[in-house]
View 1 (cartoon, rainbow, N blue to C red):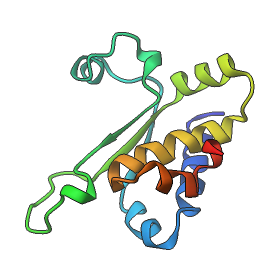
View 2 (view 1 turned 45 degrees about the vertical axis):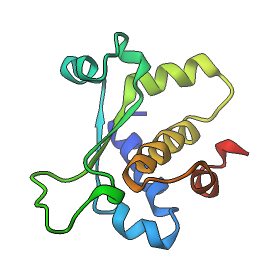
View 3 (view 1 turned 180 degrees about the vertical axis):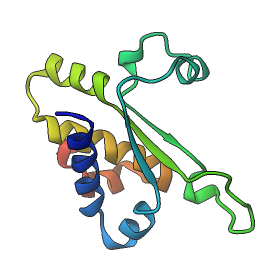
View 4 (view 1 turned 30 degrees about the vertical axis):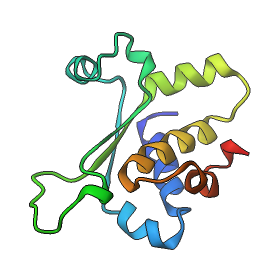
Length: 126
C-alpha cells in the first residue's frame, strides 16, 4: 500500500464515525508520512521511530475555545513504515484494520473519547 492507499483507508475510517463526530472529524487534516521526523521523536522522548504509528496534533475539542484563534488545522498523521512494520510483525490482522485502529485512536485524542466510545467504532476491542 502506498501513501494514497493509506489516506483512502484513513478517510474511509472517518466516514464510518457516528454522525455527531463525523462532521467535526472532516475538519481534521489527515497526513501520511513515511516516518516520524526527528524533532517529533525528540519532543515525545521516543528513541525508535517504529514505536510511533500515529500522532494527533492540535487542541482537543474538550479544551477548545471558539474565541481562541487556531494558527493551523488539527492534524492526524499516520506513519506508514511503522504501521507496515507492526502489521508484518503481528501477522494476524489485515492492514486496513490496523490503519483504521490507528486512525480511531488518534481521533480519540481529538475528541476526548473514552474506551467505551472507541469500542463503538473500533471493533478491534471486541
